[in-house]
Length: 489
Ligand code: ATP
Image 1 (cartoon, protein in one colour):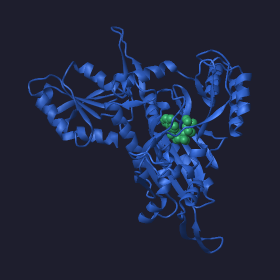
Image 2: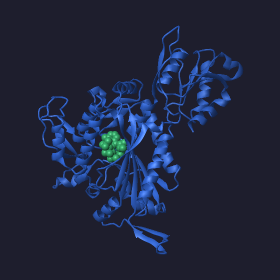
Image 3: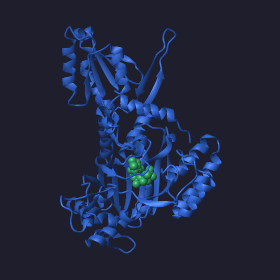
Image 4: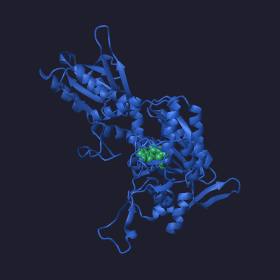
């Protein structure tokens, strides 16, 4: 597992310096594990969202989207199992009082072993951890930590408490007056967007006249009180998910699980990443609702890590909501079952879920795009940082740059802006030399720059400069819009 923390730090600094991501509430010294997306970050995030949304809904006729509320009836979380089961095993170091997620503590130790050339031992430890986690064997986990002499990185000691479970849901109170029974007022900030889809399953199915198999997609905020939130936007307490629940006939889950694994990987690869940077990781310890699950992992500068989960959730959630709400969650399937010659009839559908973290996808796109290039020649030293985003995701598509601030050039540039800005995001800039302006656009990943110069006044042509190759060519103003539109399709 090759990691490059230096590269990771550079990406974090770049995100801040160029208006992609700022630490949350920075003027108050920040709020741990909370981040704000800046002017270019919010554009990039929106473009990732749109790309996911369009490929899920527009490109699949049998998938529709919803936008459910963050606050849900508290019984939702009893039914889904989150109140009882949404826990992570934690351990505290008695000397530093620092709390660790057990899997993170062991994984970090294994990563250190790997980087010091001890990969075989690291893999042994990881596989022992997985099988102990799968059995909820907390004594075994503590023993593993002690036997391997895993130390707290603050106190440097192995003085550990027992392993305990902590619930990851945030709670708050609803309404202005506390009821006699305070419990009645407690609501949770949703830890996943999926439940908003499950409780609306029949609303959508009936009003949309959806026939199984069909899917419901949603993008929205989720909240988890991660004890150890770390690694920039990779693990936050407030984050965004892009989830799709695909409702299917019971017994067909294996086939649809494989279908969605392939489909989702295809989506990732459509953004130009090489297959070597992706891998599937099958879960041994399954969540309480799943009969199969895997992660799509990406080779981040911090190593291969989960970016998306594909879960075969069985009929667990709909069945639980039926039981807790006392409302039927059944679907009537009037297709003919060849085995019996009769309609399939009433059943509670099974579900395949695809769940991707928008912020992790952002980090993936950023990690993939961030490039340092040495442009030195015999005469002078030179370099640039360029974000090689796929054009359709780039925050800005076109920069329009008059060579000088006079002689009618800004007016022509403004006219180009007016012609293009309703079709895609453009940026106008007249300050500094053209070279400096190009570099600033490289640093935020703008795929095209056009320069308006004196020749433009004579023949209506501009110089277009391509971000990745830095090649420049003369084109007519008329053809400009189509060139950009073709690239961002
Ligand atoms: P992890 O094992 O990393 O905690 P998970 O398996 O709990 O993740 P899921 O419940 O499958 O995650 O959530 C689906 C997706 O939501 C994940 O693949 C990830 O991209 C994203 N996600 C989950 N937790 C966080 C978080 N704390 N911060 C940012 N994204 C997250």
